[in-house]
Length: 494
Image 1 (tube, rainbow, N blue to C red):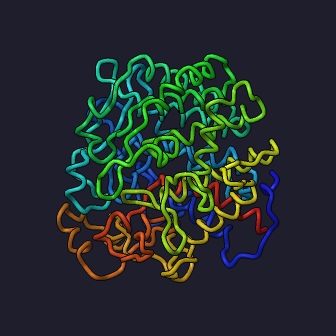
Image 2: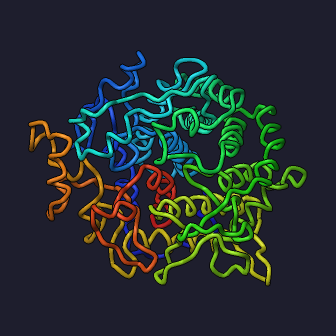
């Protein structure tokens, strides 16, 4: 892959080391029986009876963040983004590619289990309220491991369609290294998408006790259905999926989600609206960027995808005169309303690099008006600013990736990291006993290497306090898109 129109510049950051650690983080989030190859050795096997209550084997997968629940909606999005990272930038990962494939497979093996029974999809495992009331190592869990399942009668189109997207995207990843496994993933993706589309409804209504308010779907499930169909088209080239995307995309764009600012007040859709949203909940910008790859040189099919993708770019870049969908701290970090802000910085960075790549191949620039033209090289330089901020080039001089650089968060909001490891403290630690460690002043006992935390406040300050979960809690979906981004910059500076 060409380097999207920029020349290698010297950097103070070791992007290869950051890439390696960003992937290693996923081993710290593993649920299930850990293999002999486990490199984050302070973690041990956990949740080995998951699924027992519904007579299924649901062992495996990932804990989403600093708790011990398996929320399959964000887990599937994480798997989709890890897969997209490898599809776009895998050839730049070098020896880390194998570890990236292992991280994806840990997700897909579990998602296959979660979709093994036809016309039924497991949406989450673990009672979230009971789990969140305890401060316990995953290895010690004795809270209810309830399985929350969507079905024909109790549908969950968003979680099912996101799993279909993850399985379709990952099938492309394994196409060369394990053709049989790739075929299983793709076949299941098609089955699960059909279920998601045929039995429409939100899992908010079907399994609220297991997913709300933590991962309630706030903007409906149509974006996941279109996103899933887009990935299935990319993986199969079957025209029925492309027709599905074209037939439904305008419905999606005419139903803008309500974006709220930090005070909870609605933001007018002219300030970005749904087309600029992308994350575990809203897929809008991702759909337009993904689809742009195959319509950029085809004016007949480019509408509305290319105009919306261009609008997204113009809503991000500071020099663009267009209405903005993000704000910026004085230190230069992009912000959106709500907590865990670095999920936006990593996801937007990924989309910009990918779009820049497609633009370069099509000899395209984005016209934002007032004679402002955004080139692929500008998207790279902008993204480098976000990446370097996260890695330590910020007013606090803080790396927001645990274990990277000299100064990084030591009090991450994460149960396994805070509590002593099983090797150090083999005795069971009860639900409430763990809070003595949480409330203590000592740094976390175990380094969750590679974890990117929620990040600083909008004034660039960072508390490094495990009491402040929006700032100090890592999540799988903050890291997943960053894997591809770091692979790009590693190659750029090689």
